[in-house]
Image 1 (cartoon, rainbow, N blue to C red):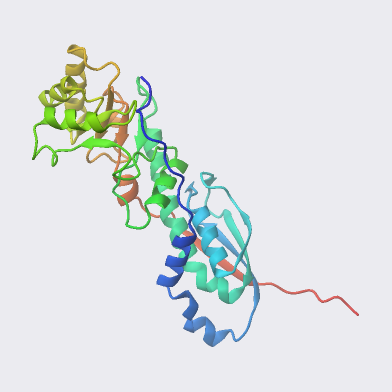
Image 2 (image 1 turned 120 degrees about the vertical axis):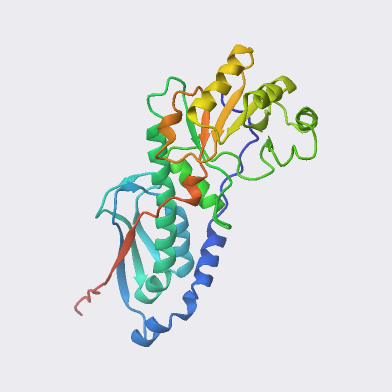
Length: 298
């Protein structure tokens, strides 16, 4: 079965605005401690070091913070690279005062994004061995202002970002169906669909899945079902001759640790809110050292 049709995804936004926002939030221009200790420029070099194994992400955003703070990035591992404990992932150079002002913002972005990427990689490993290819998708359960960072991190971990926002897909959920019958909702959505775009409907039972498929839904989101319940829904669609050519997504309470239980359901994708709203940060720390300037003899 081919991948679900979707509108072209816009590129992830520039991280310049995010960099300005996080530096402003931390009052980086008013570091009273550093200003009281260092009265003038001090040449320095800093290394950002991983404190655990995982997958690196957030590097592009961290670089934007460094640039906004007036710090040079001398060396950097690419996003998506595996990292091990004790490995240097970013090397910075510049005025120690500027590095100290940007330190926490850089580390926060790397820690959070790398945690998302690492959790995604763990979920992807959990899909291995399935008889039917099973993709790992993110959801819109993201931290306000950090959606692009987190969606990119999911891709760095080997997953797919799913729809970025409400404009990107037609997904009929239970709250929509509180106002109109399922068949009416599907008909109206199909009338607004882009060329080759599937209308997706959230379902929880076999009867809902069969109704949605017969109404013309090209994709079904089986929500909050156990592996046995989900498999029963897929079997019902197969028996009715409604499975072929229809995309099936599983969601609701699935985590990187439990995704393996859904490998043999016969779905096409699992979407995990836990990738973004519950991923533990991957720890990093910054080592800062003064740089001795060599003076040539006259």
